[in-house]
Image 1 (cartoon, chains in turn cyan, orange):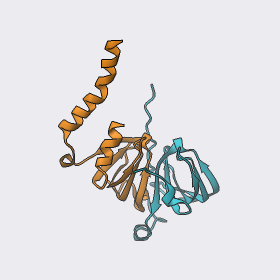
Image 2 (cartoon, one colour):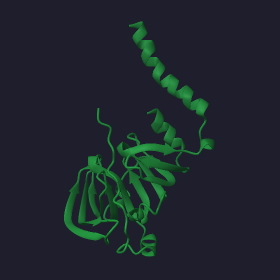
Image 3 (tube, chains in turn blue, green):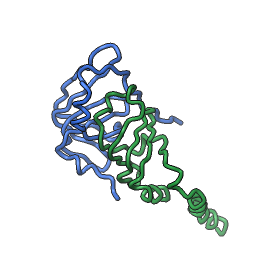
Image 4 (cartoon, rainbow over the protein chains, first blue to last red):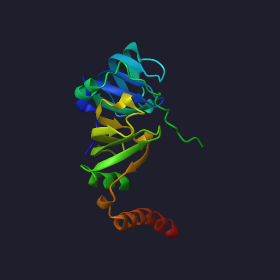
Length: 99
Length: 100
């Protein structure tokens, strides 16, 4: 019952990083440590006072240590909400216990 | 390996996963691995108003290192059995060291 990322190769994924960023892109590759290669990546910056901003990133490598969630995108659910107008507080950073 | 085996018995059940960034996701447990990375299908984010960014998430892979809690339905767990298994898991090591 292995949890692998194989089913998402060459698919659009949404990655939530440990610092609360939301990055979307096509997953070109991955490894056992969840290091990812994303093609045509872009970051969606959400803010409570302004419309979301999309920052294009191109070809991106994300180190697995920094990843919290990797997910596919449901087109129906995405269509039900106009993501260009969503106002939201940013996602918090993951708190890692130190010492 | 105990908890890995334990979660394997819960595959197919609805669980709620609370992450260290306070996000809570509910969904069906699809698979788990030795690092307790979790794959959930048909995910809903609890408190959708706070996290509209996560509305489009359907099937997700959650890295084990960011999980704070995994909430499981009490009917699915035999706590006595789990306690016994945990006790046994830790006992042999102390038995060996007392012989040496």
